[in-house]
Image (cartoon, rainbow, N blue to C red; front, side, top):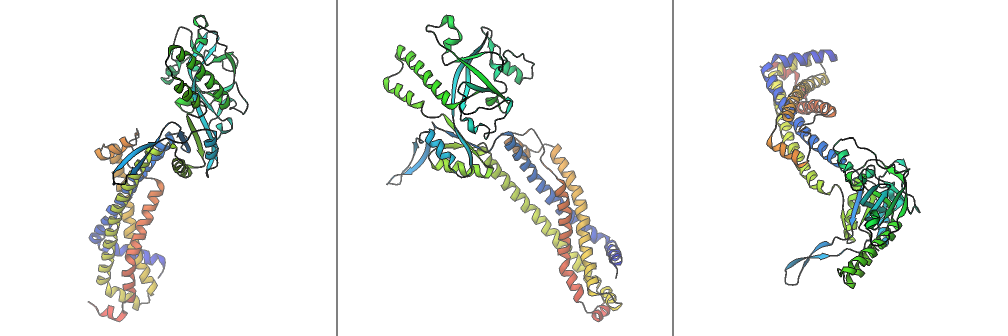
Length: 467
């Protein structure tokens, strides 16, 4: 028998018993739609999770806080438990060096935050957020220069402005928040050309208003080496400085504060010593890892070392676990429906063999090979699966459209958990469509395999004599 003869006979046999074929195909339709919709729900949740991760920006950086203790549970001899706060090791240069030696770490730097005061002509910038770090780690941490360059070792009074740090300058006596006006989409005027205009800096607020200053404060002239590309709100309005220079300025600032506070009797001598000691450590540290898988391992190692470490995706881990649990449940439901459909196809093919026993015998007598008979029944089963898959895929698109355009309370909760404005609940991708059709056809083939073997083993003479 030729392939065309086998296909023609298979189609004729399916249409000869329309009701049974329709009911069997309907089972495959429901099973295919179920599995496609269930997987599409999982794909939509994964897409939301990926969007959340992308929205976090750099997710391969671990932040270590130097002033946060780690809570450790301990058990007493009488069985009572308690939680104690362990202070972390000092976050100093030795700690930074140990971070760099960890496997999977590309760069590590201490991060020192401080507020300094800037002035350019008639414009001032008070209490500016200055972030000081190791210049060698700046590029690895994801900072990019839109103009000029990044910090380099030995820069000292060379600084780098965030993308919108200039917007924090305002005219003396007339405060206007150009930074927030820009955030609202309003057009703003540039006051200071950071590359051309002279900019001076001081640790003392009195520098901004010399006429009111009780003591003369000598400012430092800075040079802007570069302007960063937009990154995030904190970065965009910050000014970046080489860390050793910032540490010296920090000591000067603390000394000025101590002298002022001592004048009013605010600090005791022990408090002054503690303040001086703080200048030797960093507020926070940043550790850049090679990839997302490595960052979790590094974070655990840092925690074991006694530091309080945090990663951007930390709060998303619980959501991802919830998402995976939901996907497992949905997949199990879909698998059950496919199993039921497979039993339906097998039952249909077995009944077809009982009804067509004489026909099978005649085919063998007139010269049909055992392989041709096997191909015939396998093809019928595969066609049932494929036709059911096509209609099931169409039904899944209808269900997916309804899910995405009709608000269901359960799925709305998921959207809120991911803080997503995208209301896509079901996501059917091209690869999912192809997989559904192939899977439906394969299920049909597998379901028809044993009935086909039974047809092959029938005796030709016994089959012809059967009624």
